Image: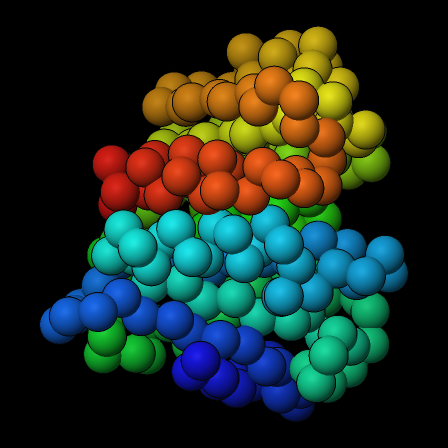
Length: 209
C-alpha cells in the first residue's frame, strides 16, 4: 500500500493514498477515522471497507491517522486540532498530480464525521460530503444546516449514538441536495455491514463527484 506522510504545522501525519488502476487524474475522497480515545484509527473496519469500494469505483482514497494516533506526531486535540489535520490532508491531495482537484469529497465516520465535516463543509475545494453515523448525541452538527453541497448521511437503525428518530429530524432540517440511508440491523460499528456501507458510499460519490 502507498504509505504517505504530510505536514500539519510542525507535525508529521501518516496516511495511505490508494489509487485506482489506470491513468489519472482521479476523483478522490478523504476518509476520516473514528474517535482516537476509543481506539479509532485509519485501519478501522469501516474506514477500510469504504476505501476498498472507492478504489473499485475508480475513486482515490486518502485515509490518515489524526495527531497522536499510530505514527502521527502530536497528541489528541479534543476534536479541534484534528480539524487542522483534515485541512492538511486536503492540502496534501491538492498537491498530487494523480488527483482531479475539482472532484474531491470528504467522508467522515463517527468522530471523523464531526471533525471532517466541520473542517471542510464550507471549503471551496470540497465538492461533496459524506457523514457515516454522525454522533448527534455527542457533537454539534448544526453547521450542516447551511451547507448546499451534495451530502449523504448514513446510520444503522441500531446506532447507539444517533437514534433513528433524531437522525430523521436532523436530516429534514438540512438543505438540498441531500440523501440519507438507514441500514437495517446495523449499529454504530457496522460489523458485517462494511460491504453494504461501502457500496452505498461509493455509488453516491461516483454520482456526485
